[in-house]
Image 1 (cartoon, rainbow, N blue to C red):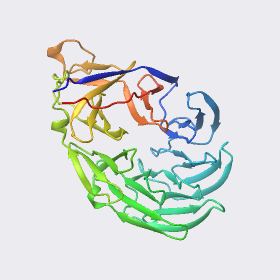
Image 2: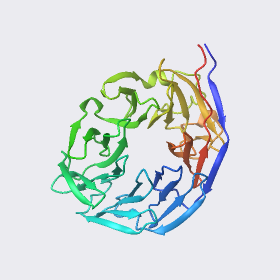
Image 3: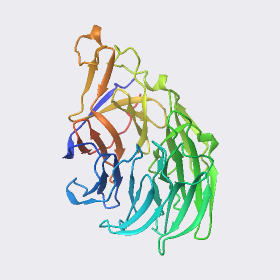
Length: 356
């Protein structure tokens, strides 16, 4: 059996911030839009994490509803979806359109999704029941409105698919279950299909070849893979097999588990972010864990019963790391937010599983 691999990643770019961002939107040119829970401003960064501009766009969290920020694929428009309104601005933040709605309840809310050709945008608002709307961007006309089953209990996340005329809507509802919808559209119409086979899954991403959609578990279940375009379950990796490795973190009272996030980094390898803060690597074909990424400056510490760091093996009850969020950016790099308040980018080497 090949040895378990530890792959070190040097920092490529980093940016120190007074607080971690509430949201990071990826831009087509490799840059980013950052917004914050306690501050109304949005910061635009280039691909090297250098500031391009900073503007007060009222993008802060209000009444426990996070303002979701996104951008059109051509970078010409910015969408901001908050507690009581959805706004569209130009690329410099000048307001073009606003849709006011009833306030979202705490921790609910919606993102926005732009079509690949930037003709349309979708969002969900809380009417008598939550409703999916499509906006025609040439004149900001609402073309379609589709009532969903939920009412003020969900946050709505949108994910593009390899088919430019289809996208996914994920509806996490706190401790309750998660529902997925597949939206198919043309210039004239749209249809919405509930994907019951994906119930209570957490969205990952599509493999670069577009053939597989990966999902993480809501609780302690397995990682599951779905075909595209059929969206049929093709494989799963139970957590007991994922963590059947020469584990150096054996002294915790509760074993490590998946911290929701699973992401393809190439067609053959996916990344698993764990509760301890590890970045494990698994093989798509054999569904086995074969290595771990070690980003520079990201430590995993042992803690005792009082929640204090410890080096006494007998006193260890848990482990915790420095990484807060994990993303794969538009350039195929690893993007993380760090407990220190830094946003960091790491180059990913070509990673292949060695022969067993």
